Length: 444
Ligand SMILES: Cc1cc2nc3c(=O)[nH]c(=O)nc-3n(C[C@H](O)[C@H](O)[C@H](O)COP(=O)(O)OP(=O)(O)OC[C@H]3O[C@@H](n4cnc5c(N)ncnc54)[C@H](O)[C@@H]3O)c2cc1C
Image (cartoon, rainbow, N blue to C red; front, top):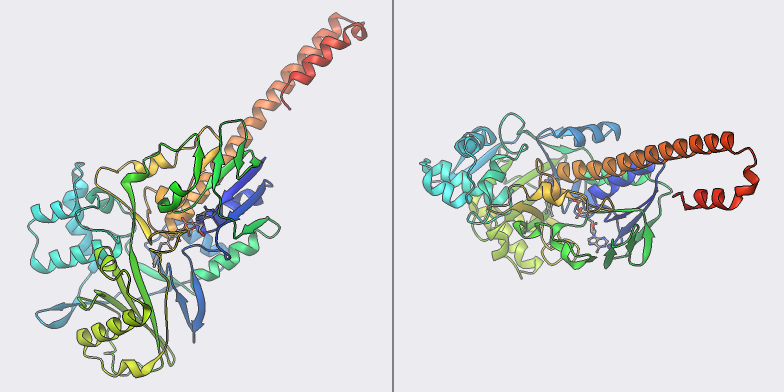
């Protein structure tokens, strides 16, 4: 069995590992010149990993936790202390995820879908609950309130309820990418190869002209349409959107003026509504974050302008001062303009509740679509990417096992027929032609 995997992000790498371990011939095609996709770590600032893409483990998704255990990468818990601006003062938000879960309960109880905006309009929330709810939907799901499906938010296993604890991977997600890369040593990886066509009209799949038995496509949903499928995809791609995010990492040598109790801070102006601070020894990283409509409003800003807005916005919000002089470095990746992502991560639009499952259904037992957008439970996250990659690889393996069993059964039936024929016709040499034809016609 030969399998092509398109994309070497978390979904593609995990699928490759699973298939490679089962002895399948796998080849990976990756458009970038590096592995990891939206898991994109650059050299650390002191002991602090710099993660331009994913950073947190949301909840306790079993497949991700198991993979981290195997990779011997412990979780680094975070205190998850949040402050929000209220009447001109920063005040702690208690039990932010629990409160969010409670606000979502009426949506979870009924099945009808609507936008987060109309849900917000009809629920009688207190003002600060309303503000927190809107801030989390826009910031966490990177979506406009009037576009995202409230049912998809209510059904998200990682963001609300008992599971809603946040952590980081010690060493960063880049360490997981490096471990996965070691696990698939020997698998051919074609870096810098942006796949343009997938033809699955015949028994085999042709990937840019090369033939494979199966293909697992893990590219982000925003760029799926850039690959020419024959026959074309009629999957529900349009009800899954890519949300925009601007994430700026500011490395500081000194954070003395930042109040010590602050970890996550919300309510910023000047473009970035949310910030978080991480310190280790004398290195500090201030992250400025804008999601959904706030990220859209920052489109076109150069990095220097983003930096000025971030510092200014954070100082106004927290009362810190003199941070400009403490800046050692700053980093940002434009995910919206990135041709192999076209956004940060996916969210489900109103009415698209079953789109992820639909998208995940194999096409003609030859093409599998995986990647975070195809995970109904953990859409938009690393956990979703991993769950989807494992699912696709296991379905491909199950198909291989099933077809091997069918082949074995057919072989056994044919052998039994042959034996019967031999018993009935001792001079089989006279019938060589017919006998050979039967054998040759049998699928190998
Ligand atoms: C700024 C930011 C912050 C985030 N924060 C978090 C977080 O804290 N926690 C969390 O869980 N998730 C977070 N995410 C989301 C998380 O990073 C993704 O959900 C996950 O990494 C997606 O993995 P994937 O394998 O599905 O897709 P990708 O990582 O995008 O992998 C797909 C690969 O396909 C490649 N590709 C695209 N087109 C082609 C082509 N034509 N041919 C060949 N290859 C192609 C791409 O280059 C890419 O490498 C964040 C994302 C961003 C951008």
